[in-house]
Length: 478
Image (tube, rainbow, N blue to C red):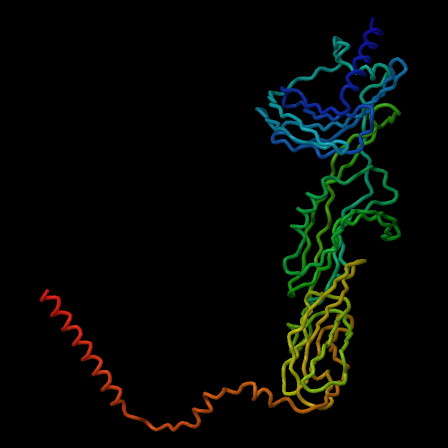
């Protein structure tokens, strides 16, 4: 009889699995305060390739996930199912409302109806109940003669590390900070990242210093890289990397931050059938770091200069010019440092040249923990006087080199030869005030009496009074 019931159960189970490839089942509507509540995703006759994070539910705390796989052969046909189970535990007694939610399984979105859960007092569980009916047991457990698997926690060889390229820098000098997860080559504890996007957003709010300019390396995909620390081999997974440039001499501090990882417990007696690992969570914490910031050496332009290692590349349209002839000159600064903070060389108009505001273009490269790039200043200038002119007298740019610990100046090496007539008088001619003022110079400045003007005003006033009197007379006569 039992054999017939078991065969019938397998037939019904096989039919139900084929009727729907993905099932999402919610736990019961009533549980005790000490009882778990679950959401189960079951995929029938195909592999569970991917699934979204299970929802957060107010009043329930996630304990972890477990998985199971079942395989059946009925009438020569094989069917299988794979399940992932999220276990929740209630935080208190009362009514818990599970709102409707959406979850993606194997790249397909599914809508799940909500549920109202009543959490009552703790329930006393019975062990080894001899009257447990057949249908309260797992047929596969009886078939393979297996009990509930025992899982053990394996000590991990991993850490969350925040490293900096330098422990001491000048104001304006860049240093690179890297937040990474390190896994030793001899690690045996299975782990994987969990909800990294949300966690990273919270982490960055804590570690980004307010007194620094940031150049973010924008890590889009996390890939392992081999790394050796103290003769021990690791795989480094970079989570975040940026170069920071201190804006003042205040120390740059990075607090300790935590990263929650999925860490699996493994079955003490693994088997080909059934569940061989159980999902759990563990938070790894980085150590706090501080970078000391030094003031730049004394210099008249100390608060204005850029800091880095820079070189000059320049280009001019022509070295032989005529007065009044425009020419284009490029002053390109390239190297390693805060490219965005580079200011234009100050070229002021004078009797020899007119300089116009430059067009500015910059390109920044972030690679291998370094920030390099170019900032180009495209000037338009017009010579006004003939002669030979060294552009170093007009174009120079001062910066501080942290490697040599000295100030340096980039100067133009170009020389232009200008021929033609002087253009300095053109500014006077262009400001000519016109014929009106020419006539003003020819007019005498003798004062004249205003009697003629006053007589004309009196005559007009009398004429107006006369018209007003006539109008009144006609009005009263009528």
